[in-house]
Image (cartoon, rainbow, N blue to C red):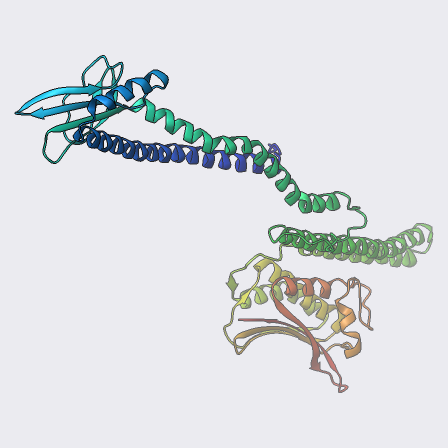
Length: 454
C-alpha cells in the first residue's frame, strides 16, 4: 500500500507567505524605481527650463561676458551637471556667444522645446528657447545617465529599508504561523495521548480558531461513536459468551447422559436433546452473524425506494412449511401500493426475524399476519400474531440484546427484535410495539410495526 510522505504545514505556510511577501516587495521595487525615474525626469526637465530661462534673461540684458567669466570660474571649482550653448541670431546669421566650459562637440540641431538626441556617444535630453525678439537662443542639455543615476539613488533610498526589513518580516511570519498553529498542535497532542481502552473526547476548554474548531468537533464525534462501538462490542461479547456458555454446557450434559445411559429410550431422548441444542446453537450463531453484519453498517447509505410486498411474500413463502407443521396460519395482507426506502437485504432480514419470532412465540395453531398499508405519506409494515403477547411495561426491554418475553421458548435467543430495531434506526423508520390479534381468552398477541416516512 502506497503511503504519502508527511510534510510540515508550518514550513509550507511560512514559505508561501515569505514568497508572497518577496514577490510583492519585488513588484514594489520595480514600481518604485519607475516612479523615481519619472520624478527625476520631471525634476530635471524643470531644472533645464529654469536654467535656460535664466541664461536667456542674462544674455538679453547684455551681460554675456560677465556671465561667461563667472561660469568658467565656477566650473573650475565644481562640475556643471548641465551643458549649454548661447547663440546670437541676427540678420539670419547665428553666432555662438558661449558654451559649456570644456565642451568638445557642438550640439546637434534641436527644435525649440524639449527633444532627445544622441550626443557625444550617449543619449541626451535638450531644451531650446528664444527671446521674444528672436535675437538670442539658448540650448541646454543633460545626459540621460545623470537621470538614471539619480533615479537609482532615489530607488535605493526607498527600497533599502524594505530590503533590510525582509528578514525581520520572515521571522515575524515564522513566529506568527507558529503561534497560530499552537491550537492545532494541542489538539494533535491530546489525540495522541488518548488511551485506546478509555476513549474520552478532546477537551474543549481551550478556544480554537474557526478553521480548527470543526476539526475538534468532528474528532469528538468520532471518538464518541468509537467509544460507543467499543462499549457495545464489549457488552455484546460478554452477553454472547454468557448465552453460548449455557447451551454448550447443556449439550455436554446431554451427550454425557446419552453416553452413560443403558436404556435405549433414555439414550434416544438425550440424543434428541443434543440435536435440539445444536439447532438452538445454529439459530443463535445465525442471529449473531446477522447482528454483526447490521450493527456496524454505514448510517449514511441512501437506499432507493422499493416495494415491500414481494419481499414479504417471499419471506412468508419460505416460512409457511414450518408454520404448517405446527398448525399455524400465516398470511400476507397487502392493502395498497406503497414504497419504503431501505436496503432490500435489510428488509428481508427484518421481516424474517419478525415472522420467525411470531411463529416461535405464538404457539401451536397461532395466527400470524403480515400487513402492508399506506398511512398518508407513510408506509407501515406490521407483523401481528395472537400468541401470548407481551405486557406493555415489558415491551421496551425486548429491544435489548438477548432479551426475551415472559413466555420463553427454548429455541429463542433474544436477538431478533434488537436486529430489527437496529435496521429500523439505520433506515430512518419508527419501531413500534403494540397489541396484536385478539385471542379466544380475551387477550391480545403482539404487533411489531415498522413505520417508514415519505
